[in-house]
Amino acid sequence: MGMQAKIAKENPLLRSGLMMAGSAAIARDSMVDNSTDDGILTAYEAANMNLTQTDLVVLSSCETGWGEMKNSQGVYGLQRAFMVAGAKSVIMSLWVVDDFATQELMSNFYREWIKDPSAENRQKAFRTAQVKLKEKFPDPYYWGAFVMVGK
Image (tube, rainbow, N blue to C red; front, side, top):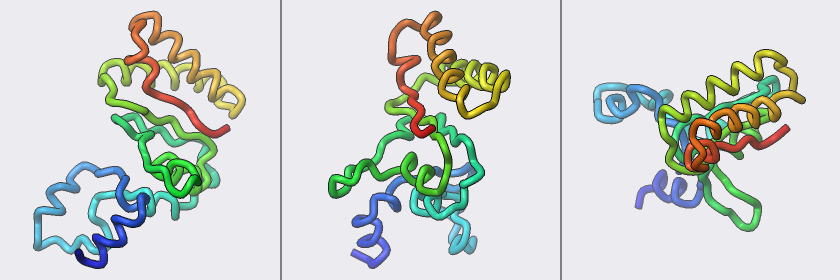
């Protein structure tokens, strides 16, 4: 096992991340110098960003709330990385999500939050968006996958 593989195996922040559009093509193309930008934002890289002026990070794809328990210190993954970086709140999903329901939930959330973009209203706007989605899709699979952590 190479040194990079060993480090990644030991650090859960290197095993979770976001693949940006085109990252697979970058990885396949041996002619591209991807030493600085491989199109993948690891949780480790996210944790080292300065997000102290960031009110909210929204991770609206599948299973973005997953992570790994590490030495009884909590879950290490994307959500923790963004909080460590200074984001005040993170919205993330706990399981595979339905694309249509996710789009509607996020639209409802932003529509509610933009009415009053205060920190106090952020959680209320999110809950209102879930309740609206629940009216259309009563099964928790559709409206319950997303949670908001933080302030």
